[in-house]
Length: 132
Image 1 (cartoon, rainbow, N blue to C red):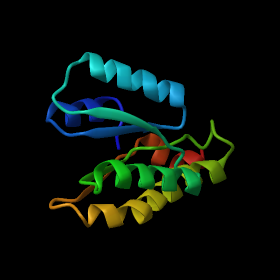
Image 2 (image 1 turned 135 degrees about the vertical axis):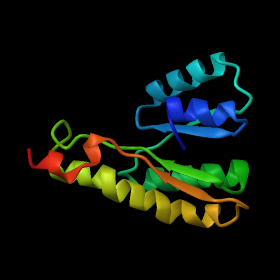
Image 3 (image 1 turned 180 degrees about the vertical axis):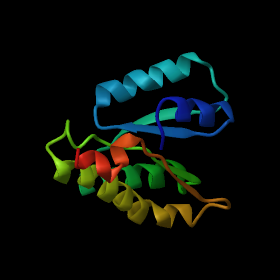
């Protein structure tokens, strides 16, 4: 799962990419932009809120039913604790969201010949930001 530049890079190498986003409209817009690039990989969208266990299960079911396994998990979701509703929301998304994704999708990664987990963060993921 990836978005933007990461999705483009993976799809340009012939990899099927499931782009995820909380906002379905924005996610579908990203897919349309990627499809216009005529990349050799396939790109699809699935709505995902990493703070919602039901949403994570829905993605897990989608990957299981459409692909049967997962080769690469890119944890790239994150929110700024100042913009979101304080520290709790930030930690829920940036830490527990990635943790929940790993817990749910590692069984599908175990079915791959070359499983990988990539955790990407920004300054939003730095705990010091919460204290400033």
